[in-house]
Amino acid sequence: MKKKNVFLLMLVLVVAFCMCACSNKDDKEKETKVKTNVAVKDIISAIQRDAKVSDFKKTIDASNLEYVYLDIDMANVDEVSGMYISDDKVDEVTVIKAKSGKAADIKKAFEKRVEDQKEVSKQYDTAQYERLNNKSNYTIEALGDYVIISICEDNAAVIKAFEASVTE
Image (cartoon, rainbow, N blue to C red; front, side, top):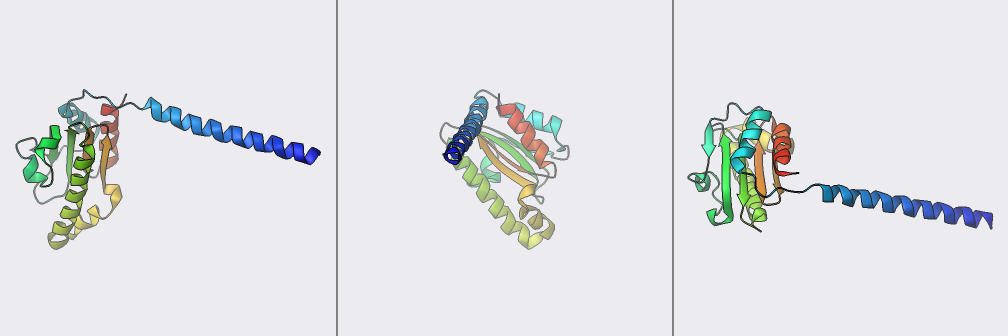
């Protein structure tokens, strides 16, 4: 009888512990709210301030977005700002505020961009190709309607600045 009571007590404690762990996770997810009114140029400014991207001299905006990212439809874009080093390097950082419900389409186009860059760099620059084959060298992330592609050596700092800019 005592063994049964001890077993039931242990079972209750395990269940209670699991419920607490799950509820803390939900509370943490609820705490992260995405801002809706951040200008993408302000996000890029924060990235320039916090990450090592000073050699990114070329800009990406609405006038050249479809040239750089062939699979992005401007009809899905509210705002865009970005930068890259040169046409022969894969380093780039671009932030897009997508129209409502279109962030997944933008993210998919960024993923296609990485695959296209891999194919091109495989033929002319194996070092760039190898960088793209290591996922720690790039990140594609969506938070709310904001989507970022970051391919650079200071990728972690770029993503940290992005997340700090768009979350409360």
